Length: 380
Image 1: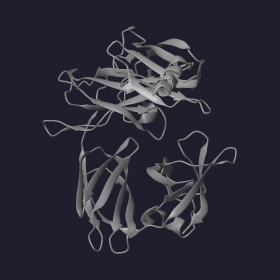
Image 2: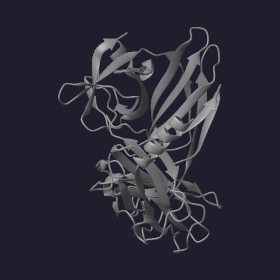
Image 3: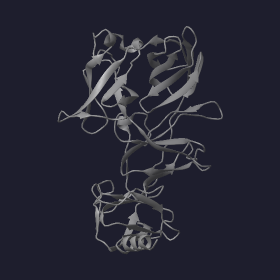
Image 4: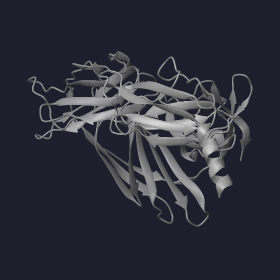
């Protein structure tokens, strides 16, 4: 027992201490309950630890000597790594000798935000109007959204630094008239809209939008399969997607006129294989369609970066279309991956020539820096 107590005393005597406080970079006030994580650099003796800062934003770690990376985060704020120069750059390790005592002053920057008012034809705010912020790149991806209050005022928060498109969603009004999806400043075309710049700790104000009036329509139909199976039907546009689950009839309400793509997916319970359908769908008025499901043909992809190295990912968002198609709108799909291989089953109804190798997809650039999809390595 005496030897054990002596060993514990010796270990504690040679432990290093890292303590500090987490503060709001803009106001200087403590950020209570911030999550602080300490991770040893490979080769150091310590173990990864994490804790919540107390009500005064303070924290303390007792660790063996070594090299450590420290990270602090809190909801609504950009995470911080000690030693980083820019908000998203890598941090630098902290070096601790035995009996070192280090105190750190950590300041977190709040994510950016956009605010404004959605106004009707009489400059009166429109309540309960959805407003969406998209990253200013194509294809558009939703970053965040908000709903206007009773005065038509919205505030979209949690935005990383960068440029954004801001757009209202379609809305049906009390007199059965409609408001069409409209970008800031008053246009339905993304290439004619004005981007909004967002920075940490900053609020981009007075991003007002006056939605354009117009007729909203319905897209409905029936998924056809033998036997009938539950299917997921997705209606896709350049600015987003809507989904519904059905074993037969489906309907999408309050749809703005425009060009859409429709995908239906299901599992064939008899063959235990995927069945699906794809339709390019120009919509001007109420539209009703029949959607027969067909078996997919599987195509495998392997990822390779610009230096020829194979890359493994878990999930990738790819945008693809048949090379021979007249469509100008790629269909965005979430593609699950296993190791270095991606298995993607495009619906025969739209990629039948790909299945017959008459119109193969040679390559597609994925929205991941330096990563390229290559088709034709394996198709079955």
